[in-house]
Length: 239
Length: 191
Image (cartoon, rainbow over all chains, first blue to last red; front, top):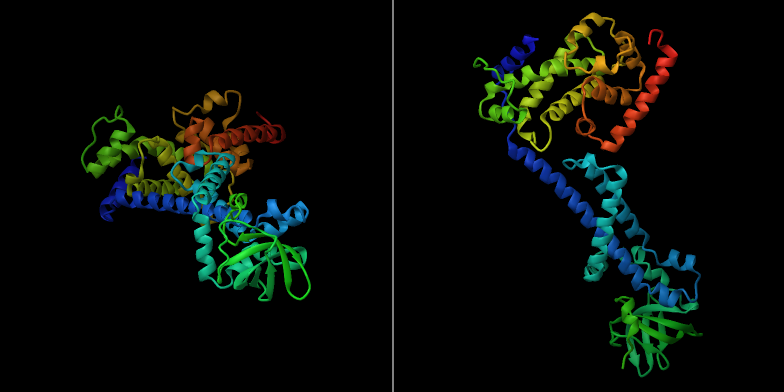
């Protein structure tokens, strides 16, 4: 047995083996923690944008009265962002086990901790309006983003069912001309419509409208809403 | 290397501090753990004494290299057993070895430390047959039972060695005991 002791000590001396510096382990721990925090942040951003897009679809206020719940949810759930949130949740779950002492927590506890972090931080980011800004950034910088990711492009691109959205290209008294999400031109009659805050009715502004499509590209609006903005905006009308 | 004083009363953490300042003090760690770790490696791997000693050397070299990663919030014993666990797993992976019972039980008996609670736990059992049955036991239960009943580890220490939750350690021990009892019924002629 004494042999092992002397062999090890000889090897240490002969091969000039030195202990790895403490900083190296601190760096490694910090790296794992940073990865974990980033996963939580990205997951939270995903969840925050999911909430924002879901709310911005006005699904409970304006869609549900016409479509059944399942249909409304299928239309309004931002699937891509939900998938992104779940991916970061899974990665952070795996990552947690590699944190110092992370293995001491049961899988169930780790899952609950991670999901709570992502839900609470995501909710907080959405309340601060950060989700709206990030979504706007993606919309402006990624050409395929809106049509493929933003559920409003499905929810508010159904003129025949009474939901239309688009960019104002002209205004003539009560007739607002818009280019809808499919690129078609519509005349929106807003004479009897509730125009919600903060719609300004300016050329270049993007709006949503609920009402009834008539023949020849005419749409009688009962509500005009801002394209961006959340449910609470619906509480106010233009004075 | 300097000649050693009697370091039996010094805590592991203090020896680690000494090693960081003076590498010669590392011999006290080796002296303290070589017998325990050799027994542990042989109990979980069932390898020859030579192979176990090779693994043990690697364990001590790795522990020396990584001595700065030891955190005194955890027990040093768990930390060095964790390295032994990793080296054992790595040995099995390299050799693609299937665990078989080592017939050289006499050598094995000599290795068993006085501190083992094996005799207490296995009062009525024949040691050799128990070891043979351990080879038949599912590896995920074998190691946890060895740590609990041969190495006399607490649940939190086993959790630190195997990097799993205490709840999982508890359930592994419980299921391992059940499986071991079934093996005793099936194969244990003298138990």
